[in-house]
Length: 326
Image 1 (cartoon, rainbow, N blue to C red):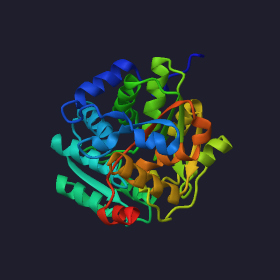
Image 2: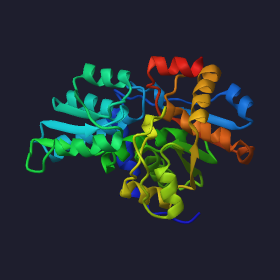
Image 3: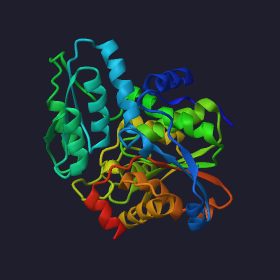
């Protein structure tokens, strides 16, 4: 296998240090093969259960590592600002409040109500702005002017965030040897962490990113060989992968290290949410079910291979999930 340049110059020592840092709040999450899913799809598929973290999603790992590094590199910062469709915001809120920092999260107007309520309950100031994540992101940047040393804007893609979420990749690859891993792409921290750990371990595993057909920006960008934006403001059940403007740094990592990026329909995502509940009794939000939807779409090519699907989160509003199961 040819030697790859490790994304973001991460090291296993850094990632293992991040795992030790977050361990009290984020114990390792399970990786399970589910017989009913295997029977349904005809694929040896294992689920990485990031819905089992304290905040119900993988993002908590990155937020804790980011804020810990922030307190050391910028001790004057007393207020952090971010934009989120929900899970990044919860992660940042938990980490910031534990560190004694004020936190403001800008969310789209249609951000799931229960994610918003969770952030408020943890102590965030919530600002609703825009039709989608990109609108919220651009507005959030204005709330942290460059001349305000006490306030820091926290991007949704950053080396420290990737280092934190790479800890789940470390757990995954310790559980079993996989031929292919499917992972949803929001802005790209999750897939970047997987690529980094795969490369550091020298594994031949293929990593496939998953977007929704509603927001296919990363898939279109990979096909074009350059960043491509797509239209926004479109309703989706998978707001966690509702990205219309790829991050250039994340795209470079993905382009160099991913085998492919595939898209799945809204209907396929809903169906996969139902399968995860009926076959494993786990709740998946839309983005969390996208990887399994992609496994189902590619099942003929996956027979005879061991496949992992990242269930990235389970934070779906009750009414939405009830409608999926109806």
